[in-house]
Picture (tube, rainbow, N blue to C red):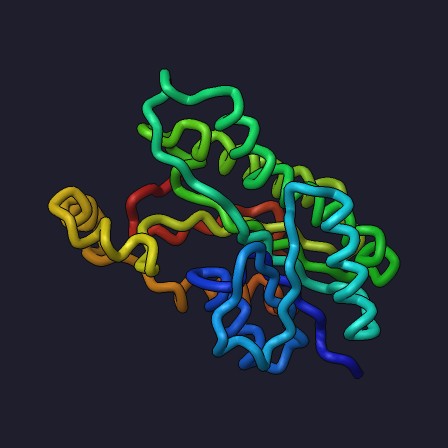
Length: 238
């Protein structure tokens, strides 16, 4: 019996890479999706360049994956995303459309491409990485927060339509997590103040997010669908 095939987008670094590594360590067949470059230490992994903003390139990447492994994708982790800090009144149409094109429509494109084979197999897992910003709104990232809120709704809609085929769709809404990108911010006075307001008293780790993704992909989570798993140390209880 072949191992399940997992495709993680935005897996060249940070949370995405840790999620992919976690699946890899559990002997899944894992595809590390990336858009720009990949670290040299990942040369032994199966990596696929993909631009999730382009339907044609999404199709080509998925075709390459399935040809290499000789099987269709069983589990998708839609992690790739962009962020941008801008006061609301300075956000341009281009900023807004670009944010939605990557953070929402990217997940839409990939999910739409893998679902037909999941339906045939009557098994699949869609896991969307979203954010606490999509639950309580944004301040200097209104367009980012809106895209993540829409991703939560997409997660629920997919669950309503396709759970009958044993395809679950869930989201992980993360709060403050220490990554290379957030490390500098967390060392500032503003960042330290944010940490003080986390009830559990610390930021999350990439490994904690990855273990939730691993659980949601397992048969142990077969009765969980349409849910947003809050992973934020108590910053938001909704």
